[in-house]
Image (cartoon, rainbow, N blue to C red; front, side):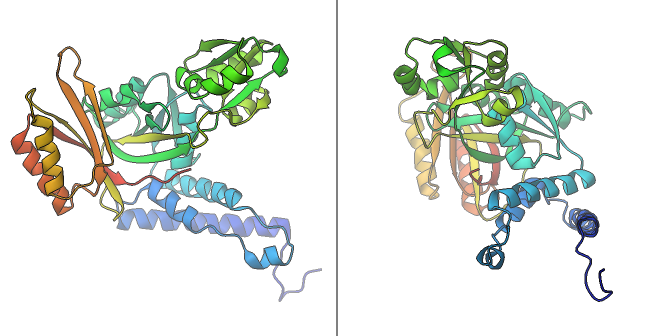
Length: 364
């Protein structure tokens, strides 16, 4: 029997108190959004995860304690659910479910936000652009890969960014671990299926361990996992969640050639995030086809002490010898040095556009 002065620590009572606190948190989020309309779900997710720590007292006493990863996962869902209750949003991502784009979306937004898997990078851009134009069928945000530490830039994403229909509003850096999955054993494998980038990122491992297997390109890693679940002899390179979903054996985990294999995912939206104090700006520009034109632009960045951390070029479709350049550097478009550099460039070159200024992404 519980005395009146003692708290009721039965599971039923604890669950009720947890739910009461969750509803209080949801109400506080509503007040936060009302007081600061610029408050965003991703910022809230990052702040909540930063508060996670192991309870040292419980750990020292040898009592059960939730791991840091479990705490982060629970908080991420709570934060996402509270924001979704107050500011419903939908995210388009390069699907299907259990693709790496899907996992990056969950890491950035949490799993309570409405998700919309689509079949191509172009479809993600179109969905966000439609929302920007007021189409109720569109999505508020999009998630697409933009760069991989092994394979470099994602050309489709850069090409669509040049169109100017959406903004970059954030990023997430995801460690990519490729896993060999199959419904049979390793000796039964005659084909390995996956998307081209995954096959490329595992090419040395495959050559060393499955030299006679035929490599088959698929639209996504999840599609490869589905194929492997249906046919003995087919293996897939895919995520561990895909193995769980399709009931596959993990023949070998983390077979990527580069153990620091990281893909950067761009978050697409229609608004311009405010400065956070730890931002980066992505800029697209085009110069005249003449000697020294690009060097002149580089001089402007030097003049305003902007340190370029990424530079890519890609051809303008249908125009030989004409190129777009994309550069990134620390700072926000509202910072005086960045604003003055952009103003100077706009006066000197053919075309310049800010693709986005946003908080530097966290690695997950």
